[in-house]
Every structure is written in C-alpha cells, then in structure tokens.
Image (cartoon, rainbow, N blue to C red):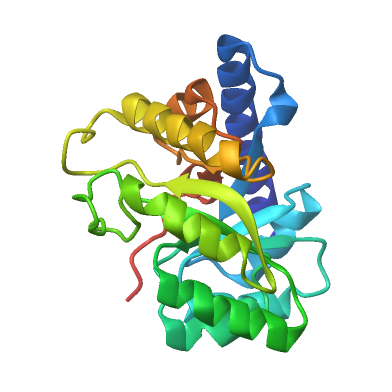
Length: 239
C-alpha cells in the first residue's frame, strides 16, 4: 500500500503539472480547472488513497462497480460523478451516490432521474452529454445527444424537480468531422456552452478532456477534466 500511495502521488503531481502548464499557456488561472479522477476498474482502496492525497472529485461509468465502491467510501469528502451511458433501470441506484450525472442525453432519462432524486430527497447535478459525431436528431456512438437537441434537454432538466442543470460534457469523437481534431471538438463544445448560458447562466460547467488530450480541453476553456490512466495507470489484464 505505501508503494501504491507513492505511485499515485507521483502520477497526480505529473497531472497537476500538465494542468497548470496548460492553464498558463491559455492565460487561465489554475483554479479555473477542476480535476476529476476516473476510478473505474480500480478498487475502493485506491479511492481512499486518492482522497488522502487531496482528490475531491471521482468518476465512475458502471453502476455495478460504482455503487459498492461509493458505499465503501461514503465516509470520505468526495463528490461522485457518473460518466457512463446510463440505463433507466440503474437510475435509482446511481441517484443514491452520484452528485453529478454527466451523461444525460434523452428526455426519458431526465424523467427517471427527477423521479428518483425527489424520492431520495436529493438534488442531482446534470450535464448534457453532447455527441459531436451524431447526425441531427441522432445519438453518438458513445452516447450523447446531437447539438440540436441541447436546448430541449436543457429546458427539461431546468424544470425538473430534484435536478440542477450544470452544463455540458463531451468525449472527443472517433468518427465524423471532429475525429482526430480534439481541440476543434472542444472549441465547438465551448461555443455550445456559450449558447446554453444565454438561457441558463448558471449552467457553466464544461467537462471535456481525458489523459491524452487534457491540454486541448484546457486551451478550449473546459472547466473540468476527467483523468483516469494518467493518475491510476494502465490496469493489468485480469486472469
């Protein structure tokens, strides 16, 4: 365990340096960018070590992994973000621990989240996942709504009991006009965020960028970056 703590501390320091350098290059303050560590596939023991090292935001993408992990770490001062494609039959469980759901991409999901948030007496932050590889009115390969669907979803979330519209999220697309053009993709997301904030000024969170492209996300204006591999390492194949 001491070796793992040292490994995580070293990786966190390197990521911190990258974020700070990217902020400096973009003329931004370091405090403008929040680090979310994506702990998927890693054990609760790693989450505990990360918390002890000052991490305050963690993310998961599968409820069957996240729910027991969040329960095991419920005593820690953490904000939990759900970032995976979310089926409505998992919503009740996810609302039990997630402070923010970053992958809201359809009206049916808004309805389910609202119902369960009210039932649990919680307020859940919501990001609209934007699919920059989606055709108009369609969905992306990895979930998300086409840019043309943002306005409708934003209105539904903003008017839904128990939910709070926090902003937008995207994953750099693998296909379409933005494939291999992360900076351009993130700049497009920022333009969409500007449009969203005209009607919903408080929805100013922009979640973009992962281990390989966090600099592009910071340069474009992202407020949150989701980093997994660069902090936790490449997980060895099981079995």
